[in-house]
Length: 577
Image (cartoon, one colour):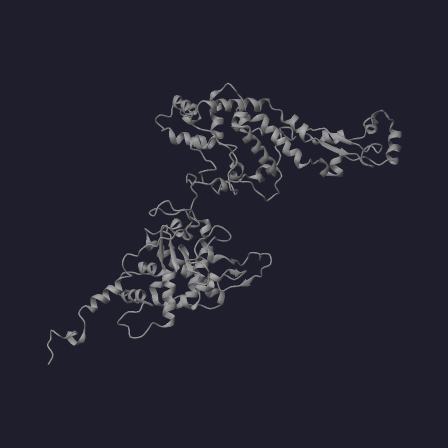
């Protein structure tokens, strides 16, 4: 007879510590999910989790979900009490749960989950009705049940519905367009199961998410997995491990907004500057949002300079030089200190806290280009004054003092250079520079001009096309007023009527690129004071890049990094003896 003290499994062969160990195993993954420190994803998402920990953190803590949490936490993990090894499908699913990373983006409606749930259910009902109408049946889906493939279709349909653009930037929307759109070049338009959508090319991420492995994961989550899967595919970024790659830890993004469109997160507690897929239509750009833009990301808007319409004067002629709305032409008084300070705000906007290309975000409602037009800043300057001066102190004295204020960094030599810039611009004759560097030579041809001369004739530069046209008429036709009417009529029959150069060939009015480059460099050399360049070498480098900028083709660009790469900056502080 055995003693009770020597029995290793009392009370029917059960180990009293096995229950605690089993509970510890079940709750190990249900604890606070540890964040993964990824060198790239951690800079773009406030929280990066494995797929297993993300799903465990989203499952409700109810008694009904207790078994599902236990199954999800122990899926594919062998235990010492397990008699048989895990099945192959469980091992693949466990590999998916542990190797897939989820970049968590806080939803804009995270503080009101009930409203988000009602909105999601309303979209589900609309999607179900549209699918049923497209299939010609009264109903297709079971109430409260959606397969994994139909969840993916619903997410794509919802992203298109809430997007203000023609094609959302979400990766699941790649290859899909509304049915009314035109097919892309070289692609074929095919119908799709999503109502109102057509597929133009395969989306491998959509096919993977509809595959058997993700369907198995959806079955493990149960009824609660529908909302979890929808929110994860809509808002979060999903990254799967590439096993066939040569490197270690290479990831492939399967869902979410492309990481190329995300902004780095300044802190883990702050929301990243991304457009949530649930808030496409309600988000308004904030012009005060700042970002640090590198010189390589700042490009000169060549289309605005080279392909804009010519400025016209009051008589309809072409205006040469600066436009009449340019700040140097709107404030011509050289003795007014307040006007000089206003021009200083245009030259150094960052020192005054105004919108600039270095730290400001462009409002897409104002312009579709990468950078906005800074020709007119009066409204922005007035708004800055209203922010800095309270309503109580907004008297004429305070307003005048604010308009004359100069930052400490710009006092002294900067004001002297601005006044010299204004004086040189007032003295510069852009018309004479243009006539000297960009003169137009037209060769007379038989039947158009004087047939006895084949030498080039210089076309007079005038803002009126009529003056240029009359300058190219033959001399004998210029004195037809002294010839009798009978002689004029007979002469018109014997000789063809001459035509102006604009009517015969417009390309003769063009000048070479080298002439345009020489004009631009000469104008800047006359207007910009030499002290602005710093050294003669800096001036030579700027002139070199101006010539390259003019010679660029239409869709080529020039960045600030290329221009400033060879600029030599002298000592800001004086040398200490």
